[in-house]
Amino acid sequence: MASQGSTGNVIAALASFFIPGLGQLLQGRLFIAIIMFVLAGVLWFFLLGWAVHLWSILDAALFKAR
Image 1 (tube, rainbow, N blue to C red):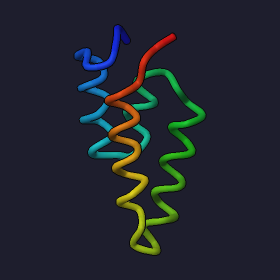
Image 2: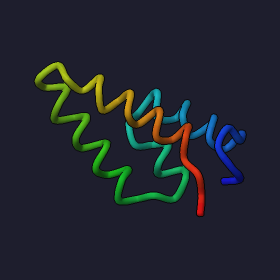
Image 3: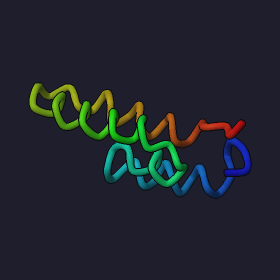
């Protein structure tokens, strides 16, 4: 990914909008993608998954590659 606000980050954020963690997976961050996907699934059971879902979208949109 180029930088924050790049097309890649926008696509990753849109992917995370539909499936939490998918945007991170597109960015090549497998570990955090798995954590967000599992955590969102568990917390949706308690009606708190929206928080992780939102975190996933923002994390993908604001990611800066080193």
